[in-house]
Length: 94
Image 1 (tube, rainbow, N blue to C red):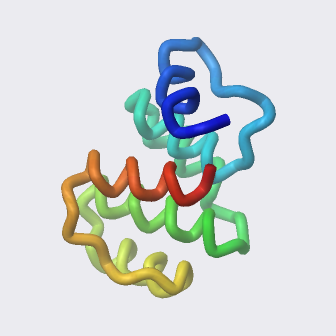
Image 2 (spheres, rainbow, N blue to C red):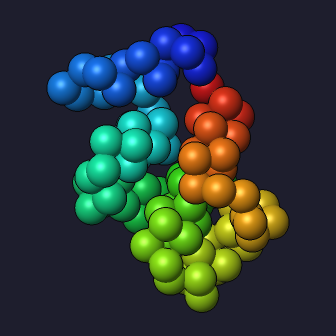
């Protein structure tokens, strides 16, 4: 799957079962289901999940929590628009 196919999948009722948890979480975030997205990554120990987790807390407006998760992901705190950061994460995880 490439980024365009991933973005096109947002028209489907559910994400592809072939997607890993961080990509599923981003998918749900794009669909406006922050809670489902958070549920998918909150207990995952890997850096990709931490990056998505950081993004979710930034969207939520919790800068302190987001900073913690960016650190866990070994990523700088983003100052990009939410859409640009979503695209960047998706592109890097696909």
